[in-house]
Image (cartoon, rainbow, N blue to C red; front, side):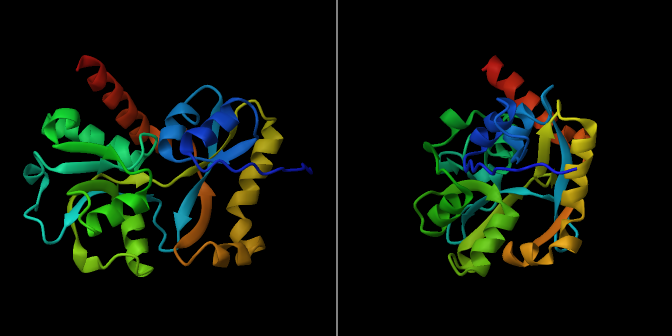
Length: 235
C-alpha cells in the first residue's frame, strides 16, 4: 500500500486538532487539549504514542517558583503573580487548573494578584527564572530541557508541585480512514526507529520512538477536561 503524504505544520495545538477534525489531514501529533477535542471524539483515534529514550510513556505537570522566593508549596502562592502556559496545553493549563479547582478549591482569577498566559512552556520557565512572574505552570521535561540547554540555571528554579503522570502525546488518525491504511500508518510509526534511526538522532537524545496506543491510555486527559469544564460552569 502506498499513499502520498503532504505535511502541514500547525504550531498551535488547537490548530493541529482542527486540521484533522476538519478533514484537512489524515493524521497529526497532538498535545492533550487537542486530544480531548479530537482523539476522544467521534472523529479521530490514537494509533501511536511517543516513548522517551528512558522508556517513559508519560510526564508530569509542575508548578515552579524562583528559588529565592519565599514560596515552597501551593499553600504559599495566594496573592502572587501567576502564569499559565497556554489554554490549549495539558501540563501548562489543564492539569494545574484542575488541581486549583478540585484540590485547592480556589479560583485563579481572584486568587492571584495577576494572572497571565505566557504562550509557551519556555516563556513560563524563563519568566520565573528572570523574576518576571512569581509562579508558573509547566512540565518537568521542558524545564529539564531548558536547564540542559543552559537557557536557565537549575539553581534558580524550585518545583513546588507535580501532577500525576500524564501520557505522552499521541499520533492520531481520522476515524474514517480504511482499516488497512490506519494499520499501515501505525506500523510505520512503531517500526520507524528500526527503519530510520537517523530521524531519532535529529529529534534529540530524549526522543526514543513510538509505541502502539489506543483511546484507553488517554482516559486521564478526558477526566481532567471534563472536571475542569464542569467546575468552570458552576463558577
